[in-house]
Image (cartoon, rainbow, N blue to C red; front, side):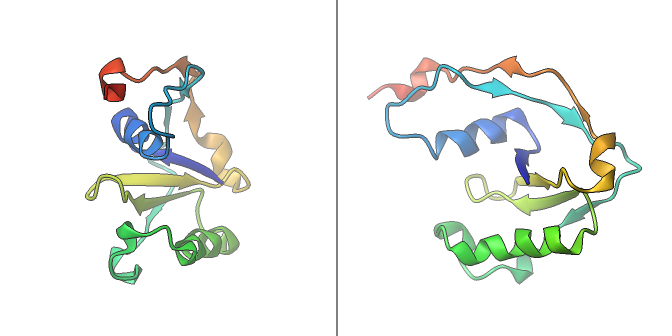
Length: 119
């Protein structure tokens, strides 16, 4: 499974919240892509999530992604962001036949702004 975001800004925040404090990685890349409109994209129903799902790293949340992979119903699933509520990340299934139609671009270097790492 590929864990992606619907924007570079969200991907940066999702990465930043999981960094060790003061660690500014020097080897990050950003990879963008396009999912053709002919490919169905599922959306996780937030009502199915446990209360305050965004406040914990409860492993039970993985069950939603695991079930989606097992169903094999689509190559893409929108899931809500815990870091920026109201925004969406997207899970991609490289094993799904439609995945090969997703257009991925060449990776580009990515660097966080130094101001994010000031004390």
